Each structure stands twice: as structure tokens, then as C-alpha cells.
Amino acid sequence: MKLLTPLLRPSRLTPLFSDEATLQRMLDVEASLAQAQAQCGIVPAQAAAVIADHCKVAQLDLGALTQAAAGAGNLAIPLVKQLTACVKAADDEAARYVHWGATSQDIIDSGLMLQLRDAFTETEALLKDLLAALAQQTARHQQTVMAGRTWLQHALPTTFGLKLAGTLDALLRWQERLKEIRPRALAAQFGGAAGTLASLEEKGPQVAQALASALSLSLPDTPWHSQRDRLLEVGGWYAGVAATLGKFASDFALLMQTEVGEAAEPVAQGRGGSSAMPHKRNPVACAAILTATTRLPGLMATLYASQLQQHERALGGWQAEWETLPDIITLAGGVMQTSLELIRDMQVFPEKMRENLHITHGLIMAEPVTLKLAEHIGKQAAHQHLEPLCHRSLDEGVALQTLLVDDALIRRYFSEDEIARLLSPLEATGSAPVFIRQVLARYKESL
Image (cartoon, rainbow, N blue to C red; front, side, top):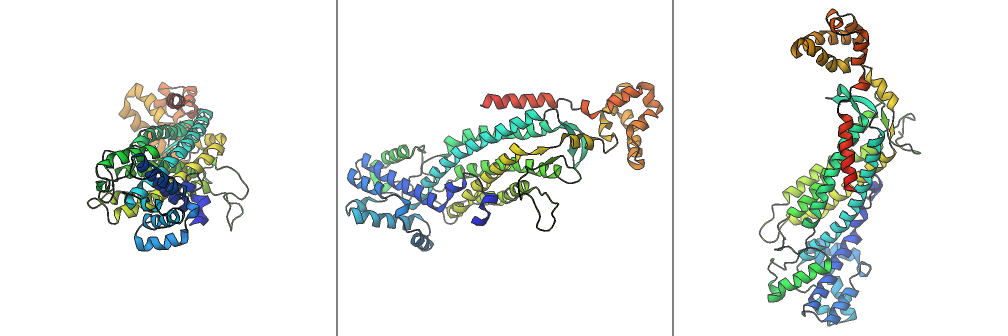
């Protein structure tokens, strides 16, 4: 549904999986196949040159090809027929060698590999930009104190920088995984009708190597017509990185709630408005990210189910991948692009964060007080003493500091100034600065 492409698939990955791009990459494989076979002495060099010259998507009748694919069962069969007709019109002899020794799946799978290689290149650049934006914001907000939240409730103070560093840390791991996946995933597919290359006799391995070299893909030890783990791994990477960014978007949207107001999406004309309420400023970027990440687990389930492919060539499982994997990649690309724009230009309100630290009347610092008191009377006794004071603070709306100052046991060990320091959230972010420095150092090492 192209109407929603700018909302859900706004990255440079989307055009790589257009109908035209898909067909052109299949034609690129046909051209390389003819040239590889010419190199191996199977196809006349002149015929290979003519075939390659006609491997251009502009020469295809896409409407007719689409209709024919419905009866043929895949795109490659009508594509080969149209390509053969085009070549025949120019050189009757050359037309004999179109698609020599290959099967439809060789062309479709190897074409997909070329699309994935393009996608990896764009993804690496997009991920690099994301990491840079996150690192910049992490460094900027490493001293921005805010309430840490567990079970959606105030827990202890943390920093917004540490929250960002957690996402940066995860994306750095995704970057490492992508580097590992790329050489393993990008493998040529060439096995012929049943994965034996029998039609090429003893020259099968030689042609396979020449084709892989022409396509700049690795040559696997065996054709992988019904072994689809490479595509599962690729889909898992894209779904995984989107999930990491979906977690970030979910947190960010919660910080944008009216009652919280600690962050906001970038300001732009018409952004986040409501058709009914002129005051609204909705988290539309977060919504787009979460829309995609909500869909991705179901798409991944299809890829997992598609691993069950029968014998040497599949019935249904292979075909189920055709739309599913591009959907995963383009949705994840949209998540990455939208997240980049959100992170790069987001608004953060440190004053509101500090204000919200005090809405529980000091209860956010109950644990540090407990631990300090435990140095004198033991952990369990300290907990039992503080718990009813916290309940009174909640029930009566009285500041915890007031109750502590009036408590005889507390005053036995702490002065009013010490109590005030114990209740200061600005001094209670623990090892957050250390964690942030470690992640930023690892980011710098990755450059």
C-alpha cells in the first residue's frame, strides 16, 4: 500500500525491493550467467554479449509478466520467456542460450542476494548515522537526572544519558552482528533443476564459481534451494534491530505523556496534530515505529514456518518468503530512519525531569536512606523501620523528609543536613556515569 510508504517505509531500503528493482536484479543474474558460461566455453561469447545487452527491465512488459506469473507460479518463468523473445528479435542464435542450465529458483534467489547486498550497504550507513546521533545525545545528557522507572512506577534516580546509552549499547551489538552476517548470508544460488547441475555435466562447478565471481557473491558448498537459514538470519537481524528501537520508542512515548512531559518529538508544521483537538501533539514517530515492530514478529513467524521446505525444491515455503522478507527489511528500515530523525532532533526537558523526581515527596530516595540506616541497625531492621514512614508519606501526603526529621531513631544517627543530602536525587545516580563512559568509549572504538 504505497499510500503508507512515507509513514512506515521512509528509508532508502524501500526502493531496493520495488518491482522494477526485483526484476532488474533477476536480469542481472541472467546476464552474469550467460557471461560465466561464455567464460567456461559453454555459450558463445557473442551470444552472451547479446543476452547481457537485453537484460534491462525497461525492455520487459511488466503488466504481461505479472499476469503470466499467476499461471506460471513464479516471476522467473515469464521473465525468461520475455527475455528470450527480446534476444531472439536481435539474434536468433543467441536466444538458444538464455537461461542455460539454470532453474527459476536460481535466478530468483540470486537476484534476492543482490538486493540484500544493496540493502546491507544502505543499512550499514543508516546504522552508522543512528549510532552517531545516539552517541551525541548520550554525551549531552549524561548528567540529566530523571526518575528511573520499574513496573511503570518511580524506582530510583537515573540519568537520561544512561537510558540512551542502553539503546546505544544494544545497537553497537547489532552492528557487530551485521558484520558477521554479511559474508555468511550473501551466497550465490545455482543448482539447476534438482540441485545437481546435471545439465552442465562436468562443468557445473566451474560455471557455478564463474557465476558467483561475476555476481561478487560467495559460492556455497552446496545449492541451498530448500535450506533457508541464511534468510532466517537476515530477517532476524532486521526484526531484532527494529525491536531494540521499538523499546526506545515505547519509552519515549511514555515520557511524552501529558502527566509526565519529560520529552517531546521534534517540532514541525502539522506534525502530531489531531483532526478534532487543536491542542494535541501526538507521538507520531513513536507510533510509526511501534506499528512496524508490532507487525514484525508475525512476519518472522512466517520465515520460521518457511524453514520446513520439502525435499530439493519447496512447495509453498519458498514462495511464502517472496513478500515476507522484503516486508521485514523495509519495515525495519523505516523504523531505523524514523528513529534517526526522532533521536537527532528530539526535545528533552531536564527541568520537568527534576520536577518529577519530587512528586513522591522524597519516596524515590527511600532505599538510599534505608541502606544508610542499615549501616547502624542492619538491613532488615532498617527496612522495617522505613516502610511505615513511607506509607504515612503516601497516605497523608507529607514529605518523607519531614517524617524522617521527626523520627527519633533517624535523628539518633543523622542530622537534618545529612537527611537532606540523603534525600537529594541529584547525588544518587550511582555508577551511571561509569556505564555511560564505557559505552561511549566502545562507540569511539567502532568508528
